[in-house]
Each structure stands twice: as C-alpha cells, then as structure tokens.
Image (cartoon, rainbow, N blue to C red; front, side):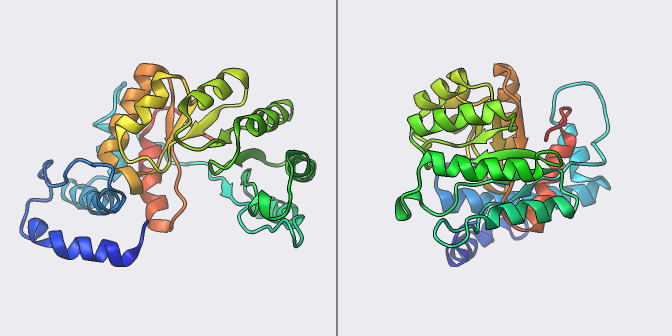
Length: 276
C-alpha cells in the first residue's frame, strides 16, 4: 500500500539495519507508531520475515501463526471462502446499473458473496439515500438468491443516512455494513451498532491495537477487520486476542494484490472461527 517512492526511500534509509540480521529476531521490526509510511513499510518487511521463518522451520506461515493463538491444538483451515469486493467502478451519471451487471457476472463466475459500494460521490450527482436503495434493491433482486451481500460505506455517510440504509439492509439480510461513518465518530458507530441487527464492521486501515481497542471498548464494531499488509501479522494477532477479550470477532480483508491476499489468507486460515 501507499506511495511506492516513499516506501523506497524508507527502505534505503533502513536497509542497513536489516542486512546481516537474524530474520528470527523478534525485535527486528519496531512497533507501529501510526505513521502510515512507516507502518506499511514495517508490514511489508515483517511479512517477508514470516515467510523466511516458515522456510527455516519447514512450515507454512499459517502453522506459525497458530502457535501464537489461544485455543486447543488444531490444523489451519485448508479452504477459505472468497468474496468479490466490487461496486467500485459504477458511475451515478453514466449507467449506474452497471453494478448490477457486475454482480451477476461475478455470480456467474462462481463467487458466493459480493461487497457493493456507494458509487461515485453522491454530491456530484444529487444522489439520495432513496436513489441508492433503489439500485441496491435491483442488486438484491438480481443475485441475492446466489450470493450473500455486504455494503462498504467507505466512511462517507452521516449517521442519519447510515441508520436509514442499515435498517433497509436489516430487512433484506445483508451480511455486514462496513465503515459507514467517518472513522473518528466512535460514538456514532456505537449507536449504529446498537440500533441495527446487521454487523457494523471496520478497521482495515488501522495499524495499531490502540486504534481498534477504542472501538472495542464502546462496542462500536460487531466485527473488526484487519489487513496484515497495514498492521503487520504480529499486531493482527494482538488485535485478534484483544477482540476475544471483548467478545468481538476479528477477521481479515485486503484490497491489494495477490501477495497480500495470500498473507491475509494465512492469518484467516489459522483462526478457529470461519468467516464469510
């Protein structure tokens, strides 16, 4: 993630601290600080080190993660259910119905779950909640008999809009409502989570346990979503364990490339709970 030239600059600044070091040294990667470039750089290096450690031990990374998680001895899950993260390209001014076509095409390809988004900025095109829900109903009508449906809010809604949409989602049994509000509105998230049946989820851009714990403490998430390409695997394990303390499940998602999909999949395979 991030801006590649900034990450390259950070790599050039810090590579002398890694060359010749023991890849199994747990202190090799510093704790995240909240600096986006630094934390994402930490995640990239840390994931590579997990891969090296797996090769040294002759084990999959998922097996190494299992050693850090509570619970009885078990094997990593061998099969994971994927969902299609879509709804990104449709334009409210030009053929918004293309999102329906996308959902149908993904169902035809064999996906059994689909995450929709809000489309281009609503204020560009005088989009209302009602207009959005009409389109979401068309998606529901087209594929809900073949796919579970989720909604990504991209932190773009106000609380009134989110409540109205959330109640609509409740009535149609959508699976989760992701980051509907700006990420600093923790109390608003807590009110939504209490008012709605649909799980309120979020956290993908958080790189530290402290950022999740503020939501856990106020029951502002029903489920926490980590991305090990943002927070590191070490921190994801800490976040997962803290979620258990609060009775809030934590699982992974990612937006970027196949390498990060693989890294997140190893974490997800190690968890005792099955998600999506």
